[in-house]
Length: 211
Image 1 (cartoon, one colour):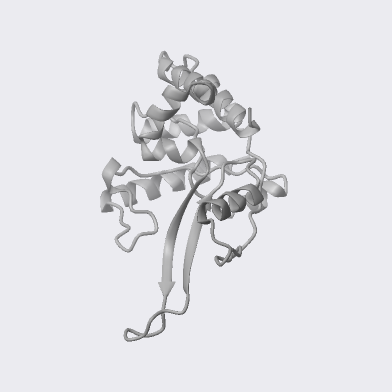
Image 2 (image 1 turned 180 degrees about the vertical axis):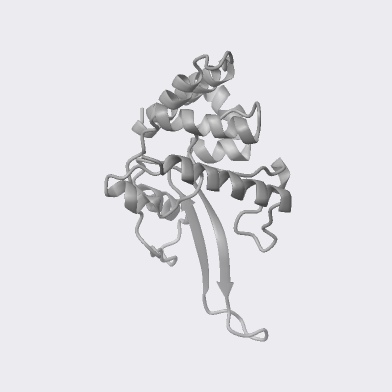
């Protein structure tokens, strides 16, 4: 099992312990599912139907840009496609490129990397940090649990992690499930959520920065 999966499950499992009179049995079920999904093809297929879960079960690639031709009245001499791949931690980029070449099955198609993948180790979430976040979240959004998870994107935090500095991203707003438009031309966030999230981040930073 990959180390990132072990750490994610350890975080979920530890956080499922009763705290302040509340229990979180769902977190244990989530971790158990995460541990054994690879050995259960039926469960794997079912979970893959959810786009968000599917994106953290496997490496995914999608064409995000297609260009071809130089004029409206001329046949194109060539075409270019940009393929964005989100690699699961521990995945060999060379194997992903080899898979794409196999799928293309055309020696006339050339593959080049825009930039090389730079892996980084997962950050271990300390119990004291999690408890501080839970207290703040309970103050701003009573009853909302804090659940560690792996993002489906990448940040500059990889440079800090490779330097031995743990990094965590903390969300501070709510969105409707069908209204997630990250990086889109119509990306947006509710005004009330923006101001509430800003206040939460300010409190979080001032709390965690205290000696």
